[in-house]
Image 1 (spheres, rainbow, N blue to C red):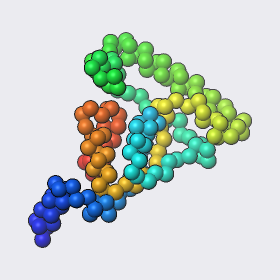
Image 2: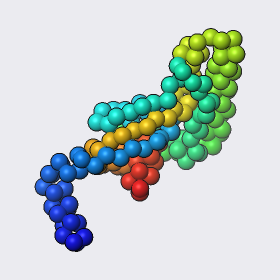
Image 3: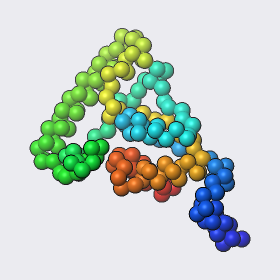
Length: 168
């Protein structure tokens, strides 16, 4: 019966019997900025196959934070942000990021057009460049990932991914 199964699953989770959830595997196709991927990969309990810039041309897509996400460095948390910055700071930051990204994209395209190896052409692309991968993880380790990354203390950008996955 469904009610008995639900009760058993809750009992097992509550008492940290993880074997049944280690047998369930999920696979996600994810696209994210490289700086988010570097946080994500800290969870070494999954299988991962990332799109390779050595073999394929990279799509020149770049992450641009929304105005409410560009904040000052938190005084209480060295790895966090807190408090708004002035609107002119946001506008200047976007202009500077766009200039760097345009220069990097132009350099990448110039090298590719001259048949320089893709593995070298990509080296100056910024961390805001999107990458993508297939990520396979068992349910037990997904629960751990979501517990850490969907938490209010997690960086906004990775938390947004975790919340979408938790909603699935």
